[in-house]
Image (tube, rainbow, N blue to C red):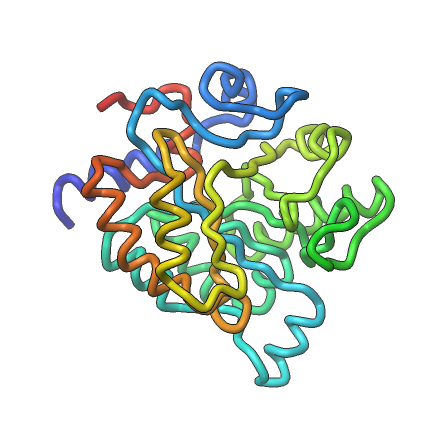
Amino acid sequence: MPATSQKRCAWAHRVRRVALAVVLATLGASASTSADGHLVRHGPRTVPRVALTFDADMTATMREQVLAGEQTHFDARILDELARTDTHATIFLTGLWAETYPDVVRRMAADPRIELGNHSYDHSAFREPCYGLPAVTTDQQRRRQVVRGARTIASVSGVTPLYFRFPGGCSEASDIQLVRSLGEVPVQWDTVSGDPFQSSAEVIIDHVLERVRNGSIVVMHLNGAPNAPRTYRALRTIIPELRARGYELVTLGELLAPDAPSE
């Protein structure tokens, strides 16, 4: 492995050991948050770093489709492209996705370029309406989604996630506080790729490249067809173009770490 890659891998391992208390204490200075101060939308605007994030959605219906051999809801080419280009990224997993693809999750957990996040247990929306997703309606159910998702990911991968993303990005202030009370950092995004059900890779490319800035958090999906059929093709342009513009592609932990090295 090149010296640069070794240095970045070592840094990734270091970031994973950053204590939750330190991250929470410094987010106000290092990242943009929502009105209540606790939903991270992007990292510092002063350094040319961008975090590519991928949601691995899985509802009960989607899992049934996988088990029946009707769909995969996983595009392995995305992980291959990240590896081929030595790109760091954060993958938000639902617990159901982790249970469905345990070998893949363990492979990701062993890759120092990949950081795992919590995307709930079964991708139920915390608030309605939310893109037609089934929803949980009580705080007890919402708490269970966070806790069960984290425990499932940890049991499969050996990694306890630090960051949480709401299914569909739908939440209220009380949900954000709930996630924080459970020891996780709720993370949104500031750059929407538009990859769900998008048949044109060029549209995804344009969405990202037109909106990205220093500190941006980009949201994409790991699912592949039919939910996100062109993400892989878009990545083959997005990654080299972001680097050509001078951006370093990092995990959320690297983007938000209070002692991240300056350029």
